[in-house]
Structures are given as structure tokens and as C-alpha cells.
Image 1: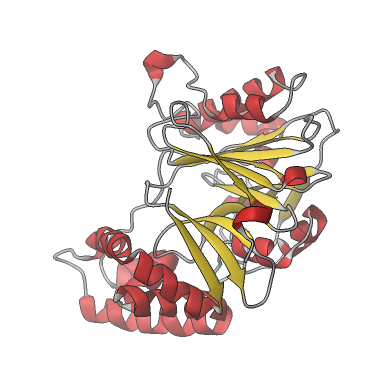
Image 2: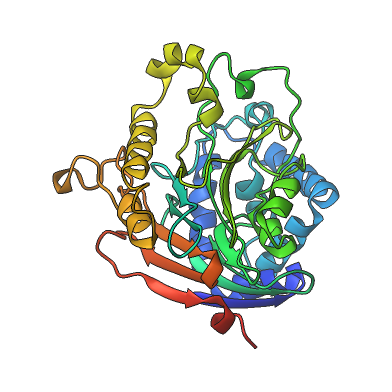
Length: 365
């Protein structure tokens, strides 16, 4: 898997990414732009909206804009395009330019953790985005060094571990169903949000600091798994940018999530909405919970790898989106914070070997 060393300011790091992954970024940008190149698209209106969006990003998320400016410089992909597929359009804006936005992403991510493994807490996850990802070894101008899983052209990162042993993985929160907080039409929502993964790894030394950071309103609503040398927790953030729930279990209890909200599924009244959930997401939620409970008396790295590589109905069902190792999986990551050790396998992780990254070695000068 490609490793890219980054250092300096956000713009300098973005420039390195742009130069190193120019072809992949161009392909990603072209694919993302296809939705807007329709016969009905008002190109002039779209350009005006994007100029305004760049101003918004500059005001609210200056680090993100600086990074994307660096990517634009290094890859020669126009900044407008990068901002468009990083931050998209609101439904109202999409109507103005007469395009229909399609949701991104693969079949679904999975995150999981054991707290009481012989190795200490172990944290892992399956990334479901298309297979453009690469590993970055970051030495930011300000912040902790880290290993991160990135997608070319995006400011967001999916997961990783920093030099203090803090590990994070993520999964999107899933559909907003009637009666849930995400579905409240009048709930305030920030105009723009960003993935918190990079900020967590640059700024936080342990789980408690990361949980506090996630309270920030400009961080995206998602499911997150966090772990350090002493503990692992699951954090659920709503799309309102404000409501955050932290799940801390007894030490012998596993933690896991897919693309559904645990705080919703734990409510008795939620059962009547189950038929409205995407069947694959509900099946994966039940599968990962069942597998983690089966392994809770023998927790460890091998058990977590086996869970994340599971196909649910057996080998004949390889690729099914309701399994954990499925057609949308791009890679599997397992972090062992106490050892400052990360294992990564590209899809299909059930077949490919894991590559070991010892952070004290790979992040050294």
C-alpha cells in the first residue's frame, strides 16, 4: 500500500499529496463531477455557488481550505472541483443548479473494539470507500505525528493512530428515521462540517481529550471508535453537530457499530421502524454485535481480525453487502495502542496479509 510522508503546514502537506497522487485525484474529481455535467445543469449558477462555498470554508474551516489549496497546486485540479466533492451542495443549492446529488460511499463501514485483550485495548474497522486510499505518515507543523488512512483529493481522513498511541476509526451514522434526533426538521445544523479524525490525531493524547474535542459543532456527525493504552469508547455524534453520546462499557464488554445509531436501536419504540432500515445495514449491525459477543471471552487482535473479515453466511456469500467483509470493503485496520502498532490489510482482508506498522519506527526522522 502506498505510503506518503507529509510535513509542514496544511498547504505544504496538501501540495505533497497533490503531486504524489495527481492521477488518482484527477480521476476522483472527474467521477464526482459527472453528477453535475448534465444537460439541465446551470453551470454559471454552480460556479457562483462554489465561489461562495470557498468563502464559507475559508471562514469556518480555514485548515481544510489551506489543505485543498495545496492539493489544487500540486495536482492541477481546480480548487472549485475539490471544494465541490469535499463539501457538496445543500438540497436547496442542488435545486438552484438543477442537478440531483447522489450519496457517496460503498456498502458500509464497520468499527469494533475489545477493551480487555491480552495486548490491552484493540481497535479496528473496515473502510468501505472505493480503493483509492493511501497511508500518510504525518509530521504537522503543530501537533502530534501520526499514521492516517486518506483518500486522494479529500481533506477528511478515515482513521489511524498518533505517536501517543491514540487510535480512531469511523463509520457514517446511517439514515435519519422518524422519531430520531437526526430527522428533526427544525434542528439547527452547522452550514459546514469536517471529519474530526485528523484533528483528533494531531491534537489529542488520549481518549478523554478526543471525546472532549468531538463536542465541537463543526465536526461531522458519525459513529467513532476511540482507543488508547487504557480504554476504548464508542462515540456517536448526531448530524445536528451538537448531540454527542459516549458509550463506555464494562471492561469485558466489546464495542461495535456499523452505519446505524446505537442510541436509536437501544430504544424499545425503535422496533417499529426496523422495516424502514436498509436491510444490509441492519443485517451487518446484528452480525457484528453477535460476532463480538461470541468473542468476548477470547478477545485479542486475532479475534478482532476474524470478526472484521467475516462473511456472515459463509464463503458462498462473499461480496454480499450485509456481511462485514463485503464487496465495498477497501481495507481493514487494527490498532494496538499499548504497543503503538497498526495492522492494515487491503481488501479483501480475508485473503490478503496484514502489513505491520510500528509507529516509533515509521514516524521517526
